[in-house]
Length: 172
Image (cartoon, rainbow, N blue to C red):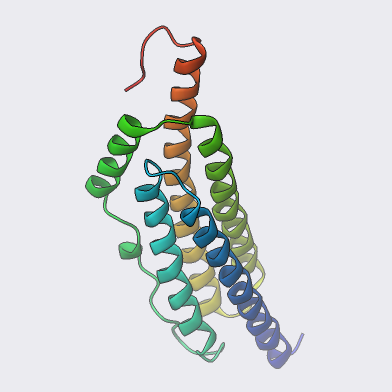
């Protein structure tokens, strides 16, 4: 495969990623707007991450695929652990309707999990070292966010078990 063809494929993958992430942002915005007051702080974290990630991806699509380096994708777009623990603790205290929130969180988790898988595949199949690094870093960030969603899901599931009487004591 010629170098030009490989560069075009990498560019096509980044363009597809941009369209996918714009749709993901729209869905996260919709889910955030429909969230309960208890879930809103966590959803805002997910939405803010997606907005910052999308901006980084837009910058990357403007970069020449054969460039030595792409825009830096850093973990500082993910809230620090102390801030995240506060969001989880607040959610655990204020959750009301876990069944409704469970489905919303499941969708958000799926968004992050599936896009992480996409970026892993881009990383594996790209010829450009810069694209591979960018895609690999993107996959890791998406995976971290999926784990954050899963931690909120775990609180939701625990609350459901408690509400149904399957839990002999509250899991706070």
